[in-house]
Length: 487
Image (cartoon, rainbow, N blue to C red; front, top):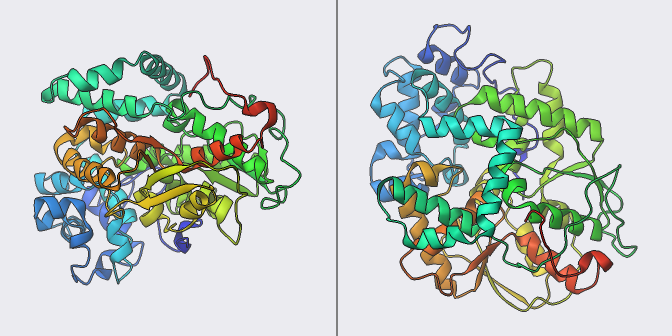
C-alpha cells in the first residue's frame, strides 16, 4: 500500500516560499520562521498527544534513552523554538535535531498522524539558518549541486573501487579518528561493488524516444510510458541498477522513455535542511519529466522516491510550480510498485536458486508505506528463497550521510542491522536504496566477524534482471562479460 499523502503533496499544507525559511517572514528571525512554517500547516505540533508510541520505534531513543532524542522530545523542542522559548542556535535544539536519522519509523506507529518528516526538514532549515552545517556536509551538498565536479568524483570512486584497494583499506586502517572515518568510507565504497561481477553487458546508451524493444509476450506494462530517475549516487556508483531497471521494465512491456535534463532528486539537501537547493533540483526534475511526457516515473532508490512524491509539499508556496509538483509527484512510483503494484504482476523468469535476506529501506517502508510490492518482485523469481531480516522496520543507520557524520551512533545502529542480517544465514542481502546497501555492506565488513563469507548486497531488481537474463529475455544483450563500463 502507498501512503496517499506521498502522491503529490498534502494540499493546504504550506511551505516556506521561494526565498527559503526565515526570509521576509513575520518575526524576522529563525524563531518567527519556524512559527510561520508550523502555523501554516494547522499547528501540526499540537497533533502529538504524547502517547509515547514513537519511543520504542525510534533508533536513537532506544540506544541513548534520552527523551530529547525521541520524536516526542524533538517535537517539544520544535514547539519551544516556534513559541520563542528556545533559541534555535542553542546546543539542545542543534544537537538533538542533528542526531535524528529521519527514518520516519515514528510516523508508521503514530496514532495521531503527526507528519514528523515534514516538520523535521523545516526545523532543520531553521537550525541551519541559526548555525551553518559542518564543513563536510556543506562540501558534499556542494558537490551534488555541481554536475561536472560530482561526475569526476564518482568516476574517481569507480576507478578506486575497481582496484579493490577499498577492500584492503577497510580491513587494515585504524578504526579511530579520521582514519576510522576513512576506513568506513572505504568499506562503503567496497560495498557498492557488483554482486554479479560478470553480469550483463550494459544496455545501449539511451537515444531517441525509447530504449530497446519489449518482448511480445510481456503484458503487464501494456506500453505505458515510463521515465526512470537515474539519480546522482545511484547512477554514479550503481549504474548497473539503472540499466537493470530499464531492461526489466522493457521485458514487462513498458516503454522506457529518455528523460534528458533530469538530475539529483534533492533528498540529501532536504534532509539536511537545505531546502532552497532541494527546491531548485525539484523544479529541474519536474520540467524534465513533464517534457518527456511520461505516464509514470520509476524510481529505484527509496529515498529519492520519497522525496519526489513529496515535491508538492516542498513547492507548496511556489505559485508557479506547486500544481505541477503535485501532478508529477502523483506519477512517481517505486520500481517495485511499477512492476508489482496496482494489480500488476511481473513476468516470471528462469530460476535463481538460493536464499536471500530482504531488508526494507526506511523511506520505502515508512515514508512511502510500500510494503508488499518488493516482496512480490522477489517472489516472482523461481527458486529464490526470501527471508525477511529481523527488526526490518528499524533503520540501518545509513540515513543519507548519517553513517559518515555520526560514526558512533550510526555505527551502533548499523552493527545491530549487520547482526540481524547474519542471523538469516543468507549469502546475499537485498535492499532498494543505495545508501542502505552501502551502510549494510560496510557494517558487514567491519563488524569484527571477518570478511570471509560476508553476505553480498544487491538491489531486488538486479535479482529479477538476472532471472530474466537466464531466461533469455534479452537476446544478445544478455551475453556475459562487462569490461570498461560503469557498474
